[in-house]
Amino acid sequence: MTFEDLMQGPCAWYGQEDSEGIAISSRIRLARNIDGYPFPARASKEQRLELREQIGELLQEDERFAEGLYLRLDELSASERMLLVERSLSSPEHGEESHEGALAVSTDTHDAVMVNEEDHLRLQVLRGGLSLKEVWEEMARLDDALEQRVNYAFSAKYGYLTCCPSNTGTGLRAGVMLHLPGLALMEEIRSVLRGLGKLGLAVRGLDGEGSDADGFLYQISNQMTLGRDEESLLADIQDVVEELVEHERNARLRLEEQRPAWLRDRVGRAVGILKNAWVLPSKEALDLLAMLRLGMGMGLLEWEHAPSVEQMMVEVRPAHLQRLAGRSLEVEERDRFRAQWMRSKLADLKKGSTL
Image (cartoon, rainbow, N blue to C red; front, side, top):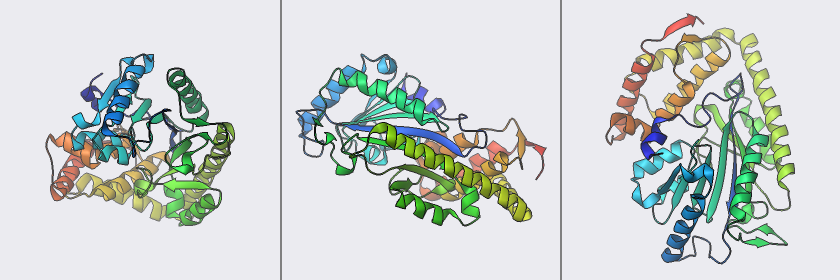
């Protein structure tokens, strides 16, 4: 696989969400460090380079990665690194730093390993829909395969040792990406998010910590790992997410019952702007596509041969947009190109049913 092959293919979770499109994807990350090496922030450049090459050789022995990619970040441009972030293969922090880091991507793009991020290793498995059980099974196989080849930094008292104390223990961060426009439009999302905080869960936007919930997209994940086993952590998140999906489903029903004209107006305006705008900032594009996705999920819109809304929600983002343009774009230029590209994507769509 080449970098271009990766970019031309869809994200690993496209088209795999639940039928209503509420639970979009499930992801598990494990933080691991190699015994005998300082954490990346304290390691020398030579130690980080040595570790990067060692991990690359180990992953070549794994059939999931043997035909995949092993990308040294200092060999990529800033735009290429951001493409990986926008595809949820790398963290924003990893994408911003180019020195001595690496990213391994499996052949099917479901699995990824960040090298020399905050920890020596950040293992990731990503799947579509609410599939934490399947994701954990795959992650356990990947983790076990690596642990047979390297010695992890481990304490009998504390568990796996990590740079950030909040990851110490299992080192596990499990999260589900949810599309919650119903709760947002019914103005119930803030109280829901406060309740999640009280349960010890973190709520983040599309790009993780510090990002906004553009497009009504929310990542729900655990905050602490110390003193908990993997199965109980995953069970808690599964239960909460299933409840959130039910709340969102009910919010959509109440929107339809209580505010049908307003709902159709919001969806219809989103379609109209996307098909006719000449300037389209990134956040506005994501929010409008989210309304289009909601309309399709609720059966208010049906299109013949419609492109994937999820794919468009990735491709309207800055790095992907510049790749489509074939050149670097200033912000204003990008907003104009985004609008032009969106008009071309939706121009020939024919309605299967009206609002």
